Amino acid sequence: MAVGARVMEQALLSARSLVQSSPMRRFILVLCLASWTGWLRSEELNFDFSKNPTGGMPTNWQSQLFGGGQPGVWKVAYDEAPSEFPALTEKALAVSKRAVVAQVSTDSTDERYPLLVYSPEAYGDFTLTTRFKTVSGAAEQMAGLAFRLQDSNNFYVVRASSLGGTLKFYKVVNGERGEPVGVNTPVTSGQWHELSVECKGNYIRCSLDGKVSLPELTDYSFTSGKIGFWTKSDSVTYFTDTKLRFTPREPLATSIVRDTMSKYPRIIELTLFAKQTNGFIRALASNKPERIGGGGGVPERSVIEKNTIFTGMDSRTVTVTLPLHDRNGETVASVRLVMKSFKGQTEQNAIARAMPIVKQMEFRVRNRQDLGD
Image (tube, rainbow, N blue to C red; front, top):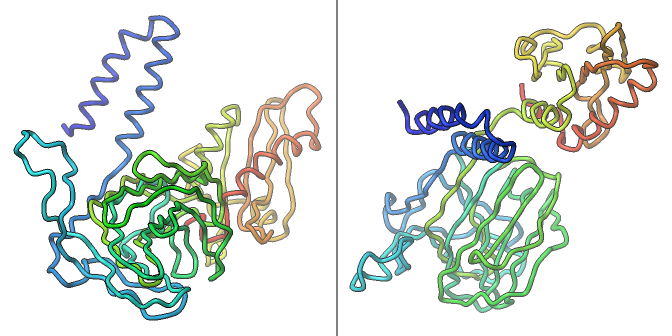
């Protein structure tokens, strides 16, 4: 049996003795189970640059450039860095030679931003941590993490500046930089620092050395993307001890349905339909697993193609099928909501009940491709 399975089995066995206990103990149990479940779903990558030849590019990473000037020159090197773990004895070395990935080009073009992007996968919810050292630079001495990167002209970045003494976040959309959000803080050149970013849904948290944090950010521009290192101008910067803890990706449609049901548990059925390239109307996600992959009917097709709304009622339930729009206002899917009806229920107030639910879902959808297939 896998370790994770044993942990969950032990938790469930413990639950039996707590079911009849006090409300507070049951509440604590729920929190623990939620924590264990989240842990079991997460995965971790530790990027070991020592597996690559010195002087070469690390495997699965690609050099990209935002702005002008020459592309960055990235290579694996060795440098003294503090150990990640506390020394076992007083005589143990506090530092050791560690494999680092270094940006060593000194092109001082002002609006020049070399990127080194991890190419195999894109990530949605994750915590990315690295240690960095700004080594030199006459114009700039910066280190950053680019994340939810679509390409070199669309991404988020959090960066620390030794010359400026700042920690800042901003986004790049279609090659245009947004307004930065940041704080003033010392970032000593020639010393190792830890930079961390956590993304969960539309929430972003950034911190430096585990002490200095930016205000919690909310942004809807990018729901997932690749990760990478970032520098500016003539910054010579080293990165090492890079770790990525992430939730395995799932289609956005699945995530939206799950999160909506969590927020509105009284919904009886929530199914999201989209039109396939062959014209078939297919259920992409639903709280009723048997619905997934099945076809939609006339209401679902009409909602998508004509931007209409359908309703239906019986003695116990009311069904509302509404359009789901992307950021441009285009109809990209239909949402079928089945809710309990009540005395005096009408089509109008059924639509009024359903509309805010769908509006919240729309916040997370940039385009049809986001929803998955």
